[in-house]
Image (cartoon, rainbow, N blue to C red; front, side):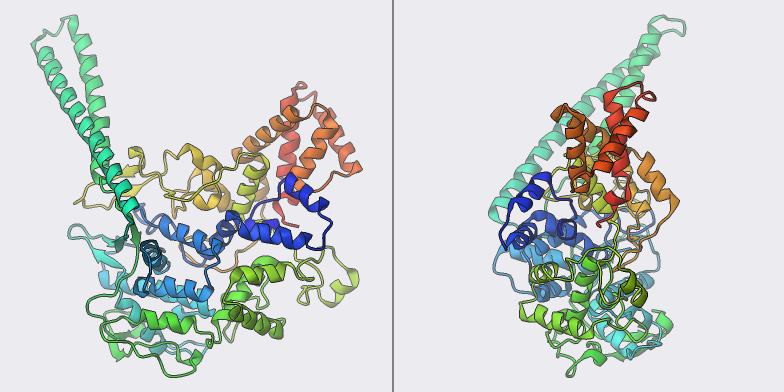
Length: 631
């Protein structure tokens, strides 16, 4: 339950509190505590990011960084933590900029929410701008269809859907709304474009804090420029003195060395000044949509080719899932607000069902509809259709509250089932479609890494913020406002704290992955160029090798071992504490004997160094199936 709701293991104190609570409400208290924790929002926001193609980089070419993408990620964490009603959640992500806000912070969040349609694999270096626009609209269509409707709308760009009753007129009816809200703009030099970003509204306090930050930044810049002038003058003087000396003059060694030192300092300082000039503004911005000044209907692109326009299609919604004609779009608007209202309407036959099915899948490993991203005719039929309808109806009637749905499901009898096999049930239902046991699931890459930090006591809380370390000049390149190539980023120098933050706050790279996120590559992280509501669970030898040899596990094992040694002098007490911390259960007598035997047999190999002995034992537990599986 703790893993499912927060992505972290329970602490030994939390386990003890639960065991001591003999009341009938013991489980309810645990669920309510977990749902109220910030960790819950961090866990479920990461699930949603799989449906967005989120990355801190724009495309896969040129390592172009998406400077403001993190604001959308933080918006999600906050939205899940406050249990934002899901219908409101939909409306904000599709048309937040068009929704009236009562306060400045609310307005800023509404704008930021439209990052759902902005973040993704956008090849801004694409020289064919018509293709760039059409491709990004197709990405947006795919996200809307997959995340909210469980339908493959991307198939309809070129032709009517092969299997489902969705025509190209449906596709281009919605696409016209998105085309009326441009996502990118062409830079007047070079061939590259940029994602559109919006300066966010600020409260008076936020503005004052930002102006002070900019003033401090300017003072630093002035100091660096003064130092640059001073070093330049000294270098000129040294070069002049050097020119006066004869070739064999013994002083020439001295002057040559100083000249080279000054040249190196000036090069470094010049880079720092260029960096400071480029990032002078501290105004908050977000990648966000806005309606264009001239919203218009869109022609069908024959075979998806923007250079082969066909008949113009009125903007509208998907007819097969509509209960009446498409909503009327006011003059001068894109239609995104009407699209959002249609998606979030309780009469929509798909949205609530797709959503509760996703939540069920995260808790049970498989959805009631196993093809969680596809509810079309070629998808799987529900194993329990009445249950799906009941949960969808209950979800809507309870104010579209995801936390209320989560609470109800995790407190149900079926969620509390053991994962142990039953021989007769296995013969009748080998795929467990009838839910006679709990499915065995491996933790996701993020949960494995976060759990390592949690059990070693090193996990540090975070309030979010930029994942990219743009404040370090050595991470940034091509910082020229009118350069031929776009500015780029390489994660050479991380922040020290990033080693101990939850994985959701680390940079998500499309290429050139970092040392801190290598675990994602080994444990089925969704390629950020794609979207998927359910991750694969592969089993390959490289995963075991990673668990055994990666420094991430060895470091955490050492910290865990050193803590055990410091806290307990007796081996038996250390072992009891270790099992409770790592496996969240008491050690058995057989395991106690085996662990002691392991330490005794290993002792001669490490020359009886106590820290190394316990580090190896801790590492063996951290690399075990029981640790990396939730059951």
